Length: 402
Ligand SMILES: Cc1ncc(COP(=O)(O)O)c(C=O)c1O
Image 1: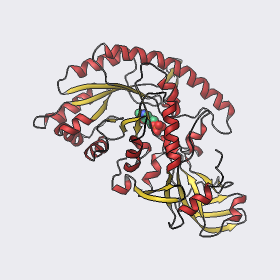
Image 2 (image 1 turned 90 degrees about the horizontal axis):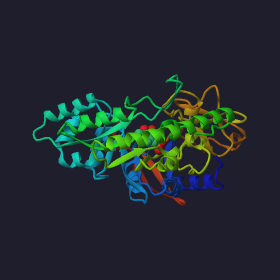
Image 3 (image 1 turned 60 degrees about the vertical axis):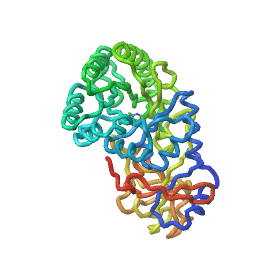
Image 4 (image 1 turned 135 degrees about the horizontal axis):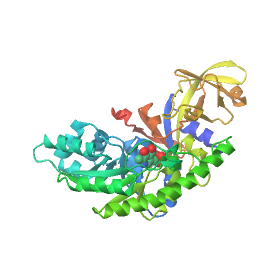
């Protein structure tokens, strides 16, 4: 990822009054990234993935922009909180819930029940919702969305790419679940979702691994073709059972590809706003780094090395070097392979280290988007040469949902 000249001086000057560690977002970069996402979605609305932002102020800012409509939340308590706060009246919870108390709250509250849709992929989910609502006086109908398995499987399931999520894979299975939903008066089928993580979340050009990149691109081509056919058949089969308000698919890494499918009415995406490091591994159009954290240099262990305070902010997922944060500014720093990013101290190696003094700051990028916000109470919003606000993260609002 090329580093824009002058950014280091601008970020250092804008945040000179702050003591690192702190996290910051460049608002101009975030706005430019939102516009790139809108264009890539080719006119279909983007449902904003909240886990990839985790800051209410920024969620509201992006929702007010062209091209974005509704939220894809990650837990039901989060969705209830966002609905009550008036952040959105169209919130789809992307993952099934087993939170009986939150389901009861959803069925109790007319405004929440109108705004929030929960995810289901089996009759047990339906039973759980009905049971929670049964304990409520005059429950409201609960809106549900069917989650479809969008993973890629070849050689009779021996080869598999994508998330292990929904057991619903075929048009017949989806239509059967739709029928089970419409047969229950307390539920209302609102939509269908199929998230192809093996395309939307796996970079097709991993740095330094050209052969692996070719294999990924082959898998993604096969998967796209298979999923486009299957998704269209599933949506036709479900629509024959009940009308649908929306069909959600995709993510930041597949915006234009998923949007090209006629069966899909909206894309769920969020990471592209911050453009974390994992999304540098894509060919083609992508955004610019917009979210960072700054650490103070606290020691100089020897030539070509400095040590920064903190930094061990690892991303979730299968463990490996790709989950580590990456030094960003000044350019020319790297992590020490033996130490990685440390719990309390992080050595940074490279020629640029010799120009750093104790008390200087270094800027790093997280591997993923919203997880950065679980480490900081606020995001300092940089506009031009100034910090214009400190926006609380979910964590800063006392909301650690996951
Ligand atoms: C259901 C669902 N939709 C969409 C996305 C894409 O989110 P992003 O654009 O932040 O990668 C994800 C990410 O994991 C997801 O789980």
